[in-house]
Length: 85
Image 1: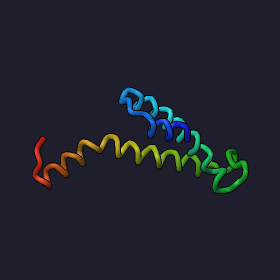
Image 2 (image 1 turned 180 degrees about the horizontal axis):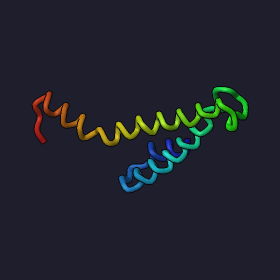
Image 3 (image 1 turned 120 degrees about the vertical axis):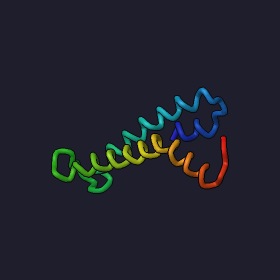
């Protein structure tokens, strides 16, 4: 929550990357507890513990698609709308 408030309060572009990194770490720690949210029990050493890993991989894949695909989708939108530059 602190990083969210800092991101809203900060106007310094140099701080945005630092805030994003801290936010990403906090998000990873939160997703690490995903299995506990679903089962409300310590399931790390059981077969249900894989849900936490799957959730983390899924979110990482979505972020990778967004991060690496942004130039591609941006170019597609520019071509469709006929905008250059």
